[in-house]
Length: 284
Image 1 (tube, rainbow, N blue to C red):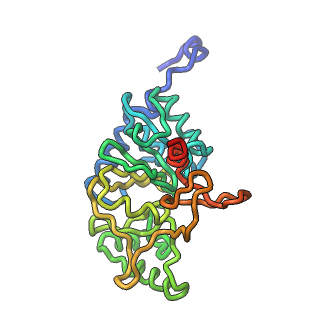
Image 2 (image 1 turned 180 degrees about the horizontal axis):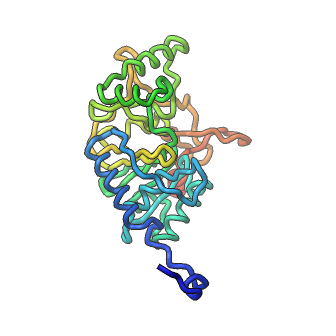
Image 3 (image 1 turned 90 degrees about the vertical axis):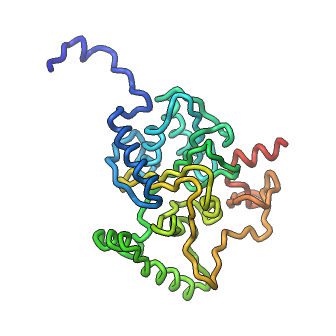
């Protein structure tokens, strides 16, 4: 079809709701439905080019844009911080292309998109958690052949993973893997939990909320439906443990019950990773 000079020189067409065209959103939602039906299974999808830097969460962003509605409220965090560069830019992109409300409070949000953390506040069936994933394949560190990886998942053959955990324990006295700790989902698939710390993994087990994982660069999505078993791989005589605080307290709110991160240059080196939770506790 020929275009006129006026059409070319005229104002740009309006951006579609949630940036993606409807066909793209439908394709992503179909992949997500399959992922929900088969918990922990990596579903391929046609990942789109997004206006964010590579590795900045394009997979999670595409999921959020595909499922968001006009009545939703979005919360975006980066390692627990609402004001991180990644969080601010993704939140701005989502709200500017949809017009929906944004919030820093978990209980006000319907969609929570995160990199590296699950909010400290309890989440319910009213929430959808979207996690950004850099490497969705939990077996990538022990097997490189894609055909072999497919066979291992198909047959539930995770013996190499168990051997890897055993060797880690023998060499170091403890299992040193922290972020991305492998978990068995619904007694079937071993899943990568993304870079969330071990602290957050118990909160995925039998959770009330739906969790969606998106890896844009790897073109994979997977999911944990509500009330699904999520069991970290461990040995009977080596119980799973989360990160220990060793008596550390948040320098701002004094909490000992949240996930703490180091803050170099301060007298007390620790503060809450979840900045919204910490801020609310200080105002109570």
